Amino acid sequence: MTVMTIYEIPDAVLREVAQPVDAVTDEVRTLIDDMFETMYAARGIGLAATQVGVTKRVVVIDLQEGEDDEGKPIRDPRAFVNPEILSTSDETSKYNEGCLSIPEQYAEVERPARCRVKWLDRDGAVHEDEMDGLLATCMQHEIDHLNGVLFIDHISRLKREMLVKKLNKARRAA
Ligand code: NI
Image 1 (cartoon, rainbow, N blue to C red):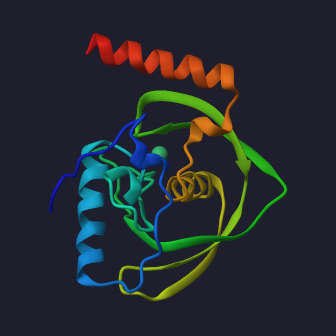
Image 2: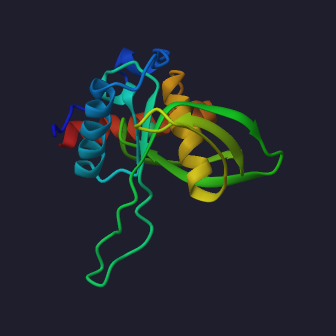
């Protein structure tokens, strides 16, 4: 498995709209495996193919919410091919979001609290499920990536400019 390069703002690839996957082939499964490897290496909980420069509609998520006896996060890898939001709740929730393409920067984003999602798994089987909590937030954040949208697009212009300024300052210091 390969750790891929994660593209960061303002790379233009992050603004591209990803193409649907025609068939879940071995090539797609290799992409999924490499995306998990990349996400774990970067200590993220979600990654869209767009972020590694592949404009295909593929998302990996592992919330790693539980801990084992040694205090290590329990892995629960989930892959989503062609994920599609079928409906969202009127009720919203706020979450302090971050993104591996906007490193170390966080902002509160308001989104629908629940969403109904349809997707293909790594074997090409169709699934449909109602998501809530952090999974719903993460799923919407990742599907945004497939549409060239970033979490900073959901906050005010002032907050966005401040966040980008902070990121650039941190980059200069590094
Ligand atoms: Ni992101």
